[in-house]
Length: 182
Image 1 (cartoon, rainbow, N blue to C red):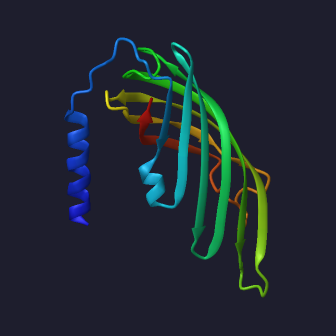
Image 2: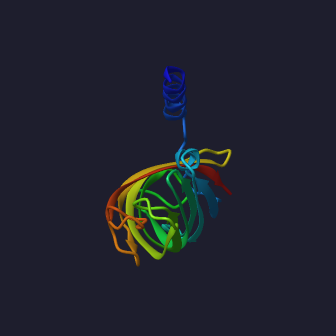
């Protein structure tokens, strides 16, 4: 466990100490990013972004998650958002604010309260999110983004029921993504 901790600390020290020159004009118009921490815990989350203005890009987030401990829990979501560059142009180093909305489908399957037959709950999911953070862009195209915000989780199943996919409707959102821009 200590090796993982020190490896992560070394990686973060290298990333944050590397020079990332702020580009005056970016020839980039698109990027694709993914959250490596989410991937480690079973959530495939990625985001495609395309510039539509010098300070605005449209984002298309999508995700898939699957957990199977005592129950099988999965969901598929896709959405749309907009990222607004606050201190620079899009696809250059700088601060951003990003509202987004994901919709999707989820399902929980499992046995509850020692009943004989498995129970199944299906739900429509709606996740509006607001986050803010900082983007770094290297000349090679490598992209790093750190941000935080809040996400509201709505589903058609009863929140808090044993079949629910959502136990707390409003959650903090931490964004850490790596990717490539071109």
